[in-house]
Image 1 (tube, rainbow, N blue to C red):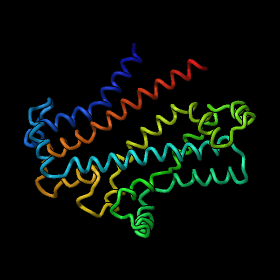
Image 2: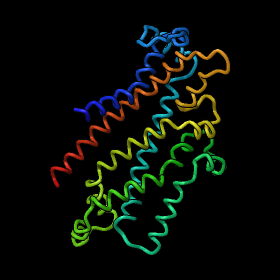
Image 3: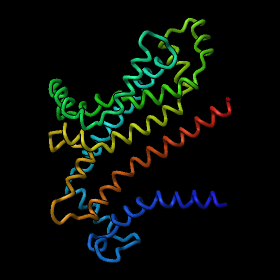
Amino acid sequence: MRRHLVLGFGVVLSLFPFYWMVVMATNSTEEILKFPPAVTPGGELMANVSKVFTEIDFFESMLNTVLAATGATVLVLLFDSLAAFTFAKFHFPGRTVLFVLLLATMMIPPQLSAIPQFVVMAQFGWVGSLKALIIPATVNAFGIFWMRQYIAGAVHDELLEAARLDGCGFLRQYWHVGLPVVRPALGFLGIYTFISVWNDYLWPLVVLVDPDRLTLQVALGQLNRTHDTDYSMVMAGTVLAVIPLLIVFLIGARNFIADLAKGAVRG
């Protein structure tokens, strides 16, 4: 009983910021700033949403964000799982050294790579294009590390040996033996990557120089003014930006749990 109370308190504590965001989005700024502030949802949501649509090109920005997040997620799932499968199940000279160097890149703050990355994108002529958001996010060290650890324990060497005896090459072993087993890990990595790219602010702010072609986070940042910020409008835009993430998380988490259950039954 005590454990359930602690877990319930943790759930309430975790959900409170989302509740407060909805409260702020459905009230006026005057209601938010007065003391004590409003603690229940109000009736100003549609008015605040209308202000968001007036101030920024919300749907164009959302489309750019969906394209960037979807493209990066698909490529990350492909290349990270392929690299992880190689590190986990195939022996080649320098494998350990390369993997250690890969892990070392995780200690480099992303802010340090912004300038050299921008220079590379400028040389490719991709500044201002969504390709500058998708291609640099194609492979990441965390995804390779996560998939490598999962593959090492989930994909048994006996399965790969049997596949080799049947004449399967490297790519067929990866596609037909490795991927079906590691679907839960791919589900988590897909959710993590999509949310990370969706919420990224710094890199799109740097590389998307065209004010008419922004991602959603950068566009929402334009709602904050130096003076007289309409906080209810900002929160309304934030609520709209969070809804697609909730949908992706619910769908992805459901499939993730289902794949885990299938694996447990098979085991």
